[in-house]
Length: 138
Length: 81
Image (cartoon, rainbow over all chains, first blue to last red; front, top):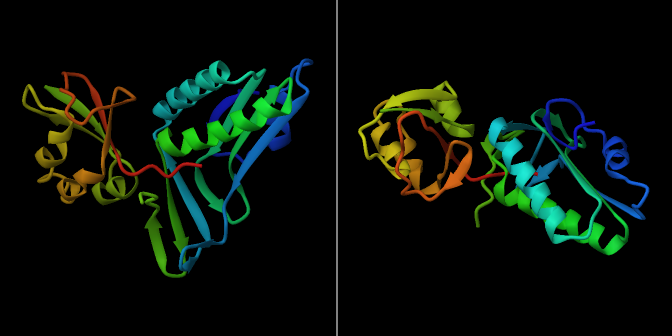
């Protein structure tokens, strides 16, 4: 399994957790981002994810390299979905394996925050009121 | 010079296409492009304050000078995760 991927297929959290684990890994932390049924003030029926795929590959590579440099971890994996996702489906899975739990938790948090900041990915919320591209700027 | 422009999300939908090869004057900087393409893609100029720019798949400062053959992506506010 590729450890870094942007895919239209459903994500496999246990598969990615297994793929990052080494015999030295005493801890594997996973994060799953899911499509929720609401946004501030309105219901959400589904999300439409769009990406700049060639740049996502580059950004995921940079984030993974930084994560391995900053934290005492064995391995990190990032899988992100694109296309149409129903409520409850996973949009992103991150798995971090480390000898000990502390760095695994910290690195996992670092990865999701960096994805939010840097990955060229967009989503459109579609609900009863229509469709809107999400803008998370304050 | 020729620069490949990549459009995403609302701008891709409004344009009806996700890329476009623009013929731009030498010396054009990334942040000049929404204004230069306004006639072809109405609305780009108004959206310009919200854009980040990537040249050849790397995010760059808005005043980065473009070169012939570059790929310039106009990145609306990101919403991954």
